[in-house]
Length: 174
Image (cartoon, rainbow, N blue to C red; front, side, top):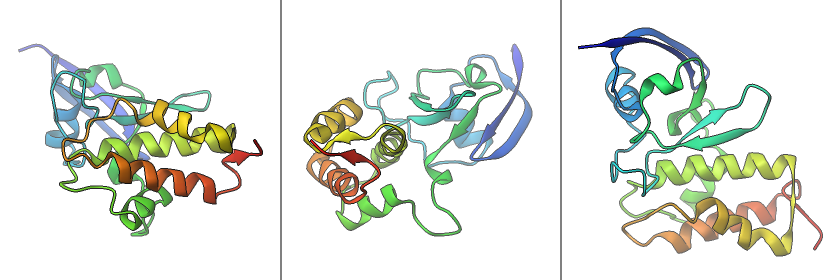
């Protein structure tokens, strides 16, 4: 079996070097090697987005990446945030708290992907607020590819709409 050396920062902590199988999926690395089981293997073909994590860009900003279709080796040297990295000292992040307050989940399987995507959206809006009239379109753009098999979409969107509209840093007039 061919292996590759893997090091990265996950949730602010240096991990590795680990010798991992060359074809190891990132979701398996997170779950099995690091014990971070919040990232879920959903569809296995990159459609449902339950498995997304946040990758912080070196120059600032971030993006989400699917971990079921991307190999762990492709994340070498990157800064990655999983759903376990959002709470601070036992206090939920604003996104996590909004989801709890709006009971924005049923089985919860897709929730980590929604939390990561919504967190990235809030960070984006903090840097580039949108007009209040554009919030719905921004929510659809950010969360639209995520699949919830329990049909919890309405509550995810309600939670995020309420969070965004309540924080004056995230919107501007219009």
